[in-house]
Image (cartoon, rainbow, N blue to C red; front, top):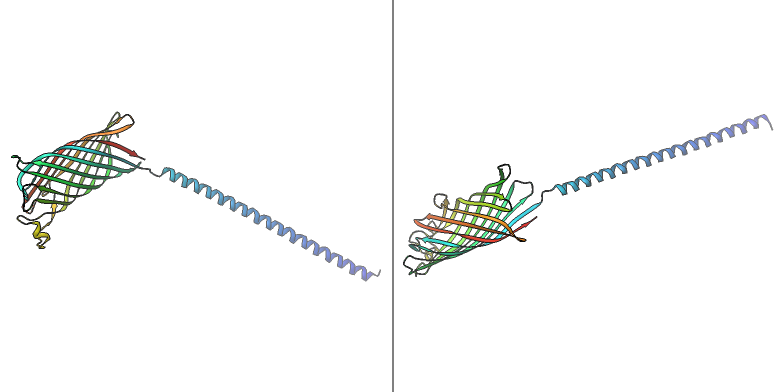
Amino acid sequence: MTVSRRVKLGNEGRMKFKEKKQMTYKTNTFSSLARSVVRVGLLCFCLFAATETISAQEKGDEVQEAPKKTMRSYKAFGAGFCKVQDTYLSPEEYKGTEMRYLSHTIREREGKKWASLIINEGYGAMGNSRSENGATLSGAYHFMYGRMRAFSLFDGKMKVWAGAQGELTLGMIYNTRNGNNPAQAIANIDFGGLVRAEYPVKKVLLSYEATCPLLGVTFSPNYGQSYYEIFNEGNYDHNVVPTTIFSVPSLRHTIAAELPIGKTKCIFGIYGDYRQQQVNNLKRHIYTSGVMIGLVRNIK
């Protein structure tokens, strides 16, 4: 073998070795890069999984820590005495008895200071004049919605709410002696103040609640005006009247005690509902007071 051929074979071997070495380097580089990508991917996956786990735990904690809604409600029946006078029907005051149904609900959230008060109430009454030669039949439905804020007194033993309320009243008074205008409608919308206090004594919960209208609007015929003139002839004469505490000085309050009897919680109380109105040169008052008894239901 000549010298030139040996040199040529040597050069070819060196070139093949270099190519093989370069391929091995590229393969190792690719493998290292692939391993790095896999490691970064695994690290990102672990971080994502950890983030999702923490987020889920936080959401779970938020759900657990969300304030729960509570509702305290009672349904009660009442009976008592009433005094009714409406000068549109008669200057006489009629005295008698009344029956009343009351649905009372307080909705609140645990740990929150604000609560809602919802009252649905209806009554029917019958009264006689002093000479007992005439009678009145009266009845009305009251719907009230209020918002009130809680305050604590005496180291948290006594709870007091104060707020505002709106009330709708619809009803009528019928006089058996009148032939021309025997009935008077009752239609009021009032806005006013609201207070409530609760004090527990062992297993008994004592409470006091009062509302008073401050502003509103009422329907009333004018002095000497008949309902025929209002609705048939369309003679409007200041029949929708704005009211204030001075023209409708009124007060509604209850004193009650909730106590368990066996597995049932009952409520016993006394109530007073004193409503007055003086508009369009006409006066009306409906005074009622009595006792009530009912069942209490707490929902969480």
